[in-house]
Image (cartoon, rainbow, N blue to C red; front, top):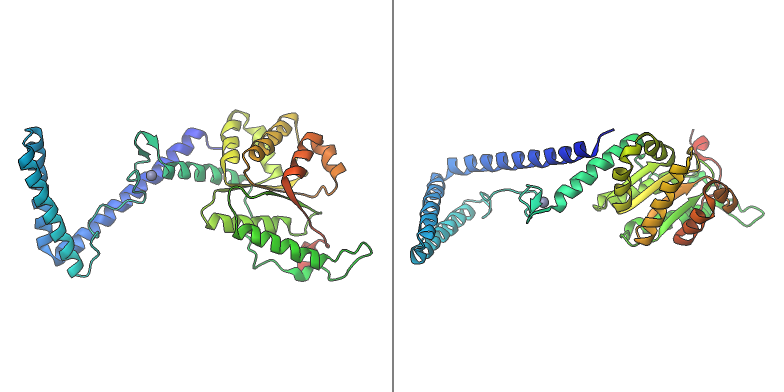
Length: 319
Ligand SMILES: [Zn+2]
């Protein structure tokens, strides 16, 4: 498993590659324009020369001359832009290219780490977590209600109708997702589509630019056990992301250490109003309480919309 330093240096490498790519893009553009309009290359030299004079004038505190030089530079710059446009290029075609104009792809602006580098670090850590528990690629379109029987049982439950409601709920949830949405608790035995729908929500949120972390319960707790020294790093990403999905609760081997981490995750995210999606095949409050204790279960039930998945294991039906 990668350490924190590695994560940061991977993120810095990404920014370095960005700078490299952007500067080669600019060079290609220059070659293209200069071949067609050599005057523009000359204007470039003139501006550079004036820039040097301007610096000298500033150093000599000759404000009048500095102002005049600045004006000349501006005029040349405007000329250059006009010529570019007249020849079918955009006015800013020869401006430096930055993926992040705030920090000019340096990762730092005004002495602070820029949000683009932060995003990249989160992405790197996210890759780490999902690489140990890969989130299945699913979409709402692939979800079929056909597998759920359209018959009402003696308790008045019609699986197809109920799943139709759950499906619409999840779709709306994804469409209008924001950082202050309520959390979701998906209950139901295995093979009823909990992972499918939670990952479909994840896919849509990621597409909208939200940072989503997915972990199957088993692999998350294994990670915390195997990397006790790095607990804080993994944990801080889980606490900070926009949406955290913890799949298949109840299948993991839980130690006291794991239990306290789970409480920390639930408690901190709930206090911050940050949404989570939990899914479990422990379908009764009694079973949940037996495994996680009352403190965790009451927090879960109090802060989540509960969805009861019903039907028969669709994985067998699909075959
Ligand atoms: Zn930036």
